[in-house]
Amino acid sequence: MSTALQNRIRRLRFDHNEMTQQELADKAGVTRQTIIALEANRYVPSLVLAFRIARTFGVGVGDVFQLEE
Image (cartoon, one colour):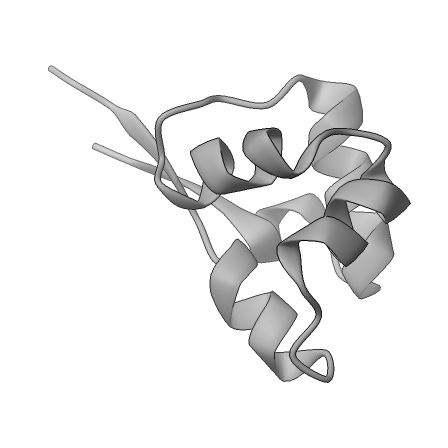
C-alpha cells in the first residue's frame, strides 16, 4: 500500500490575494525552492513547517495537507 501526501498550497496562495511563492517562503521561513518542491509533491515538510504554512493561511494543517492512499 502506497501513501502520498498531497497539498493545496498553490490553491491557498491563489485564494490569498495571489500570494507569491517567495512571499509564502518568507512567512514560513524557508526558501522559494522548498515551496516549489512542496507544490510539486516532491518534498514532505516537517511537522513544524506544515504548521507554519497552515498558520500563514489561517487554516488547520488538514486543510493544507491530505494523506492519500
